[in-house]
Length: 168
Image (cartoon, rainbow, N blue to C red):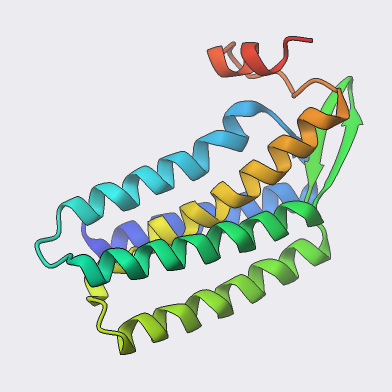
């Protein structure tokens, strides 16, 4: 799959995720953990296929990833967790959307600084950037959810991760 098509698919998937979560959805372990791990994995995989990645690129990626995780963590504090139908649900708020917008601006700024700092453009992977932001959100939301003492929503088909998280 070419780079532009992959980017378009990922952007559409992230927009669908935002709309779905803004409307409110059951909070299950797979939906919490899956997207960030898949996107981070794809981003790292894409990086391994590049011949131009050097130490400077790695340092910029680490710095940008830390910023992304922190912004994702902030975003994770803005959504609402509530109990419905006997298990946890999540809903994005207007504040969540504002943090998404600020995150986009900050990421573009960091990307511009990275470019000025000599980072190869090919090394700036959108999938990794989105993935680390979702990873930060996942960590905060997951910890908040566990502290509630309520069960995660059941999976559509039982999974190992769900079984581990719903043991109480």
